[in-house]
Length: 450
Image (spheres, helix red, strand yellow):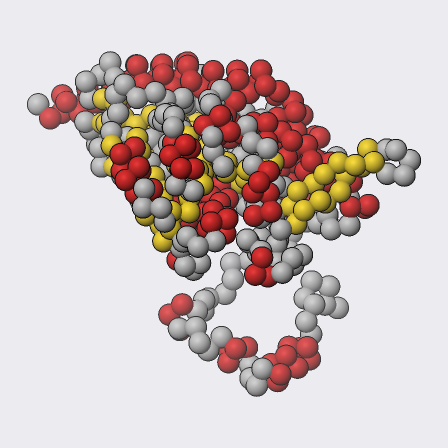
């Protein structure tokens, strides 16, 4: 009788009596009247399966698919069709949380492979089993630095870190008693002199920087790790995962902790999620790292097996010794990028970045042929993202490109500045069409203004 509604009227009455209330209205009485939904729900009548499919097809047809030239932490990289097929295999795709290794070998295997690949990609010694996203992974790294230093509760973060990441770090810090201090930027990169002055106080637990940074610039961190370690401070680098296929790794920079988002490793943008955070570190910090670590061993028959070897959260160790209370990981997304990396290999990942690099630099060159577009940070090295100043109405330009060509043309990060990104999904013809449209719009407005 109550197939889809598990609570009977009697159940509801019993629960309300336990709460000392007589009706559901009493239960929600604390919610202001102006915030309460008073209308009938817009639910259609019952439909057959054919009608339901038709309904959703018509609903989906209202979406306007756009070619994405936005980066800023979310990248439209192509994912080979075979990835989805492998991910859906029953050995791997499961909602089961691997507490009991003997009945979740498929899950433990891909976590082990994920950890191995991420450690190699970042140039670090160990990786955990993934985290919620790049923002929270960075915040967890901040807490990890404070836990490792014991007596310090100050963390420095560069002004060139993605502001979304910075806001999450600051939120975590507020409720964990951590002081977050910004390192100034100069000409689009972190001010090294300001960093050295602030870390010299010998009260900093960790320093957080980005590679590439929010403006797409590849910063030079030569000597930064040495400066941090001289003052007993941990060096933390937040990186776009895909970019590490061609750029110097956090390990090569001497970082103590490498964090970031793995979405760029083939995960579709999915309207903004779910994504997957990664965290890698050195062996000496392994017991301060939140999450799980999966290891490899052999069973009684000598067969290769996988086991959970470390779970550094308060459920498994004394609460005062736990760095974090993180209890889960983005396991499906970790599986996704594990399959992606296995298929692409080192050469494939390198080619993806080479195509993205070529496209972004071609776009920058074509745009700046028009005097209405100038590089915000000329001469600074970039991979596939760059900031450009626009001497025109940016909002109108973006709107016309959406309507005329189905292109989302960058992210407006200042009244006169766009952050643009190119991946391998954007062709040379796409770029030529965009540039021609930009030139046409600007020329038309100049004529109208005369």
